[in-house]
Image 1 (cartoon, helix red, strand yellow):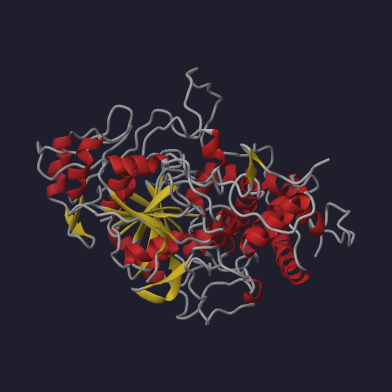
Image 2 (cartoon, rainbow over the protein chains, first blue to last red):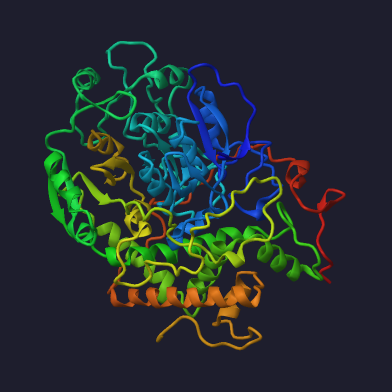
Length: 490
Length: 105
């Protein structure tokens, strides 16, 4: 299986945590393509901040993995074709290289920018976790921008303990990212099971981990929630003691503290009632204290996401003009043709769709009706949440599609004529229906992955997509309350 | 379709409120078959987007970002910029330390 766009030649020290990076994260002197021909031959002049932090912590970075072009396919509930690989654990469904590499055990974790929820969905189908941190807690310096108000680096992982440990390493204020919490430390921490042990991963005063402690902390298999402001006021010893008595879960014998008895999980009944699996709700009620509520505006989540994301993505990709870096078309007669020929030849179907949709919703005649309206609804959605009534919200995952089918595919006749130079592309699965229209556009359409993962992206909230009751759910907590997510997972 | 953001427009794209106009703004020049497919899909999106009109947003202010950002000037400390060579390294065409582009006048 070929997971990589670029695979590094490195010798991982024995026992080192192995990570892969979605090819949207830039590493100095290596290619960075975001899955697009427009960035072929682009060599990064810089290291993303997350890479610097991983390396300081002793994490082995194995390479850059295949990804959909700018993640745009996920906006249209479509499975990407050209930069996906088939995963060993579920080889009927194309997934991103990052998910496949973790699912197949090539790496323990993968860093991705999952603004659409497509990676979360793929991870869930393969029994993996995706941890999406609070917007503004992980630096995006060196991340190829897609949707700036939602871009956030998260973690695909085999156990949530791995994911939160990696977040502990990569989170923290970075002056190179202009949209971050300036002082707040993420509300999670790892502690060794035995109080007083050396090598504990403790955040510095600025919220960053102490690098010298990370490598040893990564070996530990204990994950304990650390309450933030307004929390329980427990001491570290008390936390550790609870940890030792906690239950076990995950694939690595990972221990988790049993959720607080008072933890309340909000079930958006209007979302689940549109789904198929009522056993998930029954299982939730057996395991948690639950609070039913109606998630307002859910019926337009997908539209709001599509409008905002297309607007921002179309803006962000204006930088690709064939002049400063990457691909340039041949045979142009003037500057305008250089721009248009380059972009038309290099962008894939879904990026073009997003670019034109973005131009439409931002146009003077549509701005108020679409873009401005979507931003106002985004505020209504954010303000409709009441984290005094529940500690976390649970959302269903989209579920596994019928074997051998992709969600949607661009017409095969429009596939780029030739793959980007140097890329090993897999042939698209032959079972894909080439003319399938996108789903999720009609108001009465069933919940789609875009809508199901939209809440945390629209509101900047942390979320964890986890295997649950034969399928999966996503827990969403209030801003900077990753500690609540940790308590939800048990 | 009613109340759509897409109008018929002129075949030469002179009407900016047409698919061809948006295509031009996106700096694309599609082949006919691709244009046909994308136009169909965007009209479907348009119809779906029009459902937002059913929601009364009153005087709710737009939410641009979930962070309450305010302008902060960084410390006035010189930082090492990228060198000219580094910035030109990935340019598809360059000459004497500059990006090379077609004649503009």
